[in-house]
Length: 118
Image (cartoon, rainbow, N blue to C red; front, side, top):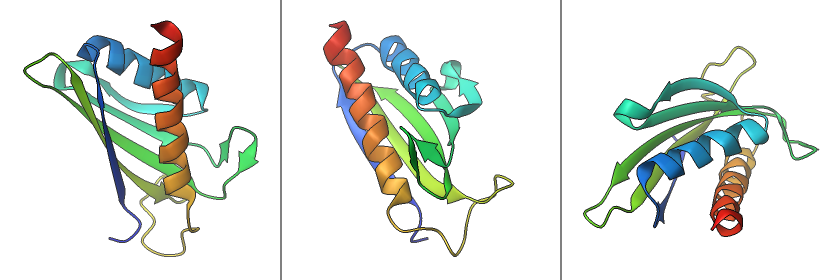
């Protein structure tokens, strides 16, 4: 599906710290947590149409999966896609660039958390 976007990143921090930071970032950016499952390393968030004061036009869903490598670093992979007004995946008519912008801002905020905290 062309509206689905993926992005991943590697963080040189333990899983618990990365998961907590991702949860806090999502909430600070106006996201609504749909699934909070640290035991299975899953976090799902619905982002609002507004992001940092800008109206984007579409809601987005971020499905995050976390994994830990042998060195103890945390990998975060996100599958993101636009949603309609009732929270269903948009199959057509999504605005261009919305999901990419949400992903970019989310990763920027998440990386910023580790720079400021450490």
